Length: 103
Image 1: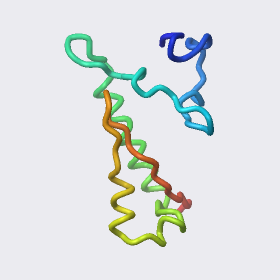
Image 2: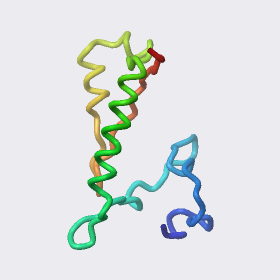
Image 3: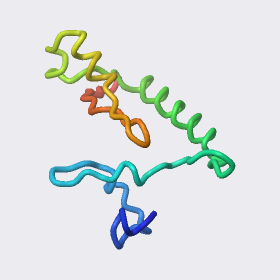
Image 4: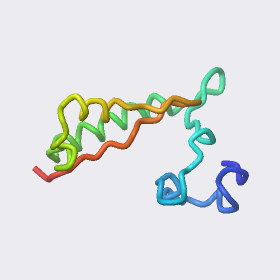
């Protein structure tokens, strides 16, 4: 990761750098995890399968529902918020407010 985009501590493990906060939004155009073409990441397929397994496990262990604020909105507005994407170099999902309750 380039210090130009990520600061002097670019090589340190700091996952919080990917969390937006007031006054800071991480540079999404600087992060392309798998690339493409002849130099595509060999672990891309494994990472995709692993992500699906994690999501399936979460769905089994938690009841996932919209937050009370979102649940008050009409269904078409809820759907619009869930499917809102920002398109740039990569597609980025919008904010989704969900409530996780242990089953």
